[in-house]
Image: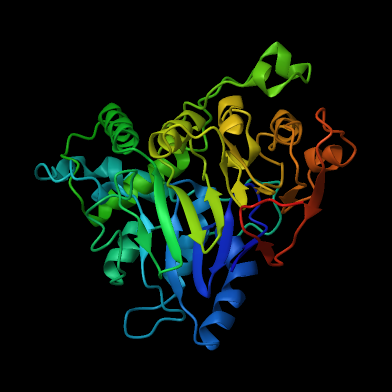
Length: 395
């Protein structure tokens, strides 16, 4: 049995998954997502004797990490948790083995303190009910100081494509498809380069202040798109995805944890904000000679951005259920070229596209006809369970 909830997370992600009775939380949107939607849900689970077997922060971006900061800031210490959390996956600076290479020079800490004072970004002004998180502490600091089982231990190793399969039970397994260690190192080097530019001369060792500054810098940097603001002419003229696609080059997005979760015969591919080329490369490496890989559901990368779903990726993967998480108020996600490319492919089964907001793109898709004549339907969900079947795709 595999089912999930996709919560209203503004322009972010927040997924609660029930895999054969094991609960997993994948991102938590902004702090307001936690306070408005997740807090009561998790309290009810705890009251019923349940725990979170795994919490995953896919990457350090405000629309993914903010709700997790609120969760772990309010969840209490090891002696008394509001809800027990068995394991946490989160790649912060101390998760990379290259960081413990010397002392920090105290005369340079003013740069880090200035970044820390800025805190984490808050939701866009147009979003309703913006609620701040505990702005002064990184998730790394919260996990370490409150003694969570973090990245298989104390957080000193990374979760990346080299990680082995992770089993919750005989029937429930997780595969980590990304990021590569090279993507995590690229983010660390970008941070170091910016710190040097700002005048920081200390060594990048792990400390509370360094952890705080790193995550807050990453979260702000992720808000700045690396993609040109002017879209290709074909895209402006509403061409095909093949005409409009340009790869994501955001280093923060490239660091996303990508997961394939299997529960019995059901499976879900959770793409975070990952680069399409990385996902294609890893799936092909693990499935030599496969022409197409079927999942019960696919969480589309980066809220349906045309820079994260390539024609090559869609040629490789398919599912009867697609999940698109965004309110459409930032970067006008999802891009319609992505939605059209999903439903334009021939299929013997109906594709159901689930949105957590009734965006302009979702409304337009309702009146669209698949170029291949494939069946599809549009669904707007508001915190209800989405039941996922096996991958046979019959009917």
